[in-house]
Every structure is written in C-alpha cells, then in structure tokens.
Amino acid sequence: MAFWEELSLEQMNNEQWELLCDGCGKCCLNKVIDDDTEELYYTNAACHLLSHKTGSCDKYPERFKHVPQCTAITKDNIASLDWLPDSCSYRRLHMGKTLPSWHPLLTGSKAAMHQAGMSVKGKVVDERKIKYLEDHIVLWPLVSKD
Ligand code: SF4
Image (cartoon, rainbow, N blue to C red):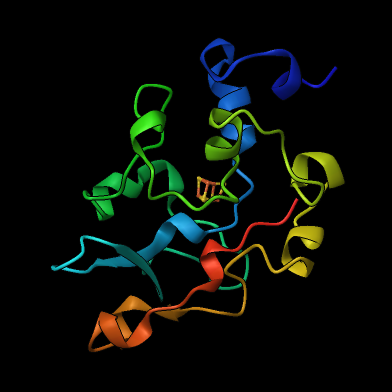
C-alpha cells in the first residue's frame, strides 16, 4: 500500500510530506480578494521565484529569505488553508480524497500533470511584469481532475 493511502497526514514524516506536493505551482500564483464579497480569486501572475518551465520554485529551500510572505504548508495549518486549489494534494488528502491519477507519485513524472492541464506550465506571467492584478484573474487554477 502506498504511504499516502496507509498513513494520515499527521503520521507522515517530513520526506513523505514533501513528496506529496505535485509541483503544480498553483499555490505560487497571486490572489486577489474582493473587498465587498471577500471572495478570493486566482490570477495568472506568478511569484517571481516560480520557474515557468517546470512550475517549481527556483529557490525552494531558501524561499522565505526572498519572499517572507510565502506560506509554508504544514500539518498544523492545512485545515485553515482553504484558499489552496481543490487539485492540491495536501488539500485533497485533508478532505479525505486520494491522489489524482496524474500525480507525479503515481506516474513517475510531471508529464501527465502538465498534459491534464493541472499545472501552471505555459499559462502564467511574472508578477513583476504586470500592473494590475485584477486584470489577471483566471479560473483555470480552480479546475480539478481526478
Ligand atoms: S498547490 Fe499544493 S500540490 Fe500544487 S504546488 Fe502548491 S502545495 Fe504543491
């Protein structure tokens, strides 16, 4: 049995926890919150540390040094991170689902994830190049496929 089916999130060690991340890059997109409705919207404006080719953080181990406001996803805060996309592995497991069929842990690479359109690859712009985040609201990060 695979470790993510056998263990709860709380029972996983650090290595297993890190392996769960599919590297989709969606959590590295800027979001905007509507002042009136408090609704959260994703944009296609990516953190400047995100590699647009791979969808991974270029400075993952030292990301907080460069982007102090980056959120670490942990066992302690996963329940409160309801802004994570439904496709996010941590969110899926927290919500009692299993990993999707395109997840790199199941397929051995990120190719199926990119093909399923579940990553940011080829769809984002560098946050430093945009003027108004509101002009960059997109819905595709909210799509989730099993
Ligand atoms: S959204 Fe979740 S699975 Fe995707 S890169 Fe972020 S933490 Fe990893």
